[in-house]
Image (tube, rainbow, N blue to C red; front, side, top):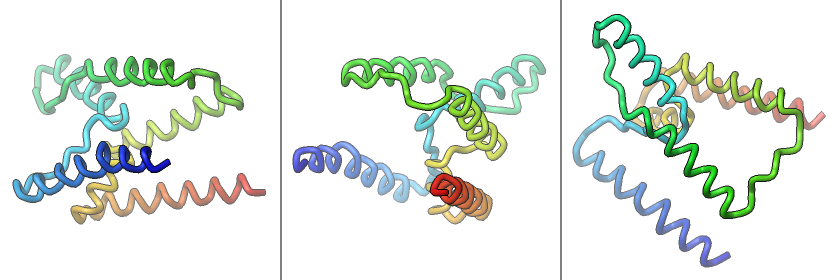
Length: 145
C-alpha cells in the first residue's frame, strides 16, 4: 500500500502540481484535454462542420488521440486482467453513458474540465458542477432505497 501511495504521488500529484504552477506562471487558461473522450467528439463535430461549410470557425485538436485512448485503455485492462464484463444490463450502461456524453457535449466540457474551470472562477462551470453533483446525489439516494 505504501508503494502505491508513493507511485500515486510521484506519477499523479507532482506532475499536476508542476503543470498548474507553470499555467499560473504563464497566465494561460487551462485546457484539460484528453481526459475523457467527450472533447474529441466535440472536435470531430467541429472538424466536420468546418469541412462541410469551409467556414473555419473552429480549431480542433488531433482526432487520432481517441484511438490512442481506446487502444491504451484496452491494453492496460488486458495486461492487468480486468477485461471481464461488468455485472448489470448493457442497455443501462449504454443509456447512462449516452446521457453523460450528451450533457457534456451540450456544455462542451467533461467533469475534469469543469473542476479546472471552477477553480478559474467560471460561473457557467460552477452551475454545471452543481447540476452534476445534484444528479449524482439524487441517483445515490435512489440506489439506497
